[in-house]
Figure (spheres, helix red, strand yellow):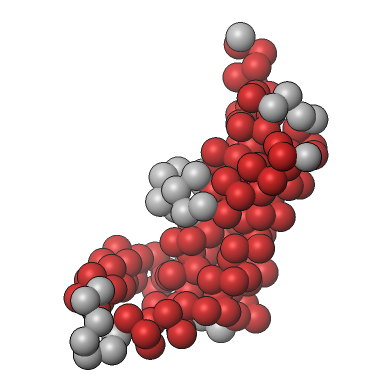
Length: 152
């Protein structure tokens, strides 16, 4: 039971997300891949839901005059805006799916939720698009786990 907790938790963390949770559950805990896949995408989708619902409140808090993190927050938003402006202009909201689906560092649900916030993509559009990207990323990572096990 504790294995399920750790997989779920790891899938919610910003750097690892399901890219770390699926290999953990499959290789370290030796759980069935389908079970690990379901737990991992559930945790990743859960944190996406929370982020999309609270990012506006977090931003309001961090942009207060006397907040020591104000400059960091503004720089982070500016960085993501500059980095992803062209992609959003070209692909629109579909960019969220593609951005999350390819399991590379810093291209997960956390970043996609931040991008949706920055570009004003409404929750009703952002949540299903990011969730689809999470499922696709989970399938890719699961496939890579199966393939790497054949090499061992």
